[in-house]
Amino acid sequence: PERVTTTRIGDYVWYAGNSGETTHPVAEKRRNALGLFDMSGNVSEMCFDRHWADTKRRVIRGGDYWSKTGTYFLLVSYENWAEPREAYFTLGFRFARTD
Image: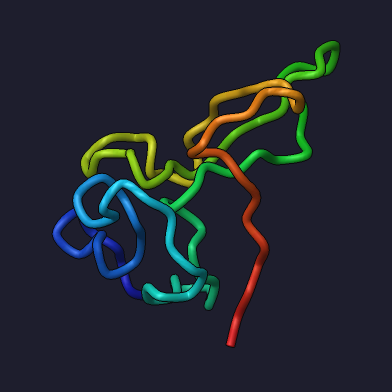
């Protein structure tokens, strides 16, 4: 599989360096090694997973169009949290799509 580096990140994700501070339609960038588009950047993903078992907080992953390259925010493994009732202009859902 092709490795995404910070010098090529703009080929795969919308982030602070190329987004124009706005969201973009799905699949305008290259797909990853698994054939999936937009798994990082553009919008952060609110997942169904709970941050802690005894809370309403949901896991957030993947960074967004304000994330800077070279930071951990764009990593799929990056984890933050928010409650489902909270709204942020950089937060959304990722719908899996392949060709």
